Image (tube, rainbow, N blue to C red):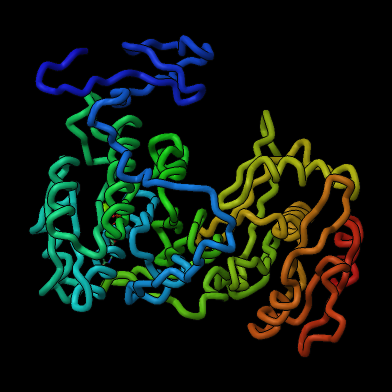
Length: 458
Ligand code: TYD
Ligand code: MG
């Protein structure tokens, strides 16, 4: 569609192979893949409108040792758990993307952070989702400092860019990237094309001016940030908000960070006074049932630099029809693999059983060191016998039935001992050289040994 009022033309380009087409078509003319064409702004070749020229600068080849490497100055957000997830605070000129389900607390956290920062630096909250009145009311309810917290209700990208240019805040929050729209594109706000263009323009501005930009992004039903992960490549840091909306705990996890470690987490509790940091979170993901129940196994998982104890629950029940495998907070594909290993190497069959596995408290566990705990929870549920009290488990399981070591085994054991656990079934390679006071270690090399060890403990 040609637009008279806009000298810049849009074309459609393939997100797979980069081929372009003048108008939208279902199939890419280049690679033949379906539904990959998205609208983009056509770059005039030559001429004066080189959008990214300012970024290019003049560069020549250097050796790395000639380049002055200095630590980035950190701007603390005033919220310790948020700083921890960011790797020590915000960095000027960096672009941070915060993703999460609706209602999980993204706007609340950022409002609290801006309020904590507003007395020492210039901040701006741009909202396309809520009105100033709504935000002001929330701030008042949370008794937040708002005297220097500047607010703008706007969704037009070009206007936002102009205002940021002139207002020059040190930190700007854009809530959310999906509500913004650029005049240069015909697509609707929230479409891949708009999201990508708006994020790219804001990133460009951040790099040029040194404004730290925090983008809020909604997560699609499939759990990815909308705009098929395009944003993750553009920005410097990607944080995900996790947690069960039914529990009050929230985790904020870095999945990409150009300025710090990934998988470092911040832990919060949602209270009636907003999000409160939880500085010693290791025991919050243990369900508090009094007596021991079958199908429950306590895992010590490592999140960044912190060991966390998480209860893994399994329910194995007679299937009617096709047996189902369902996981919450754990990888479903990995569950299928673990069941195969259990059958092949320990002779325990679940063909005719539904298997459900859940990590308590809405925490998402990605590390393979959870394998052994998942398996033992399944065995416990299948046999309808609870695991011994005060037992913790960790270890990765391989296809050959071997139990592989987990990183930072010592720290995991120490944390478990600190919380009063007295026994640990762990990979032999993680066995500490010196005994850890209060905890008896049962080292295993193979899955069948681990199952056997349970019998010995009964
Ligand atoms: P919000 O920050 O609006 O979520 P997002 O921006 O991620 O969509 O989250 C608000 C939710 O948190 C809402 O469901 C109510 C709850 N909440 C509290 O429990 N206590 C509070 O003090 C606030 C502000 C919100
Ligand atoms: Mg919100």
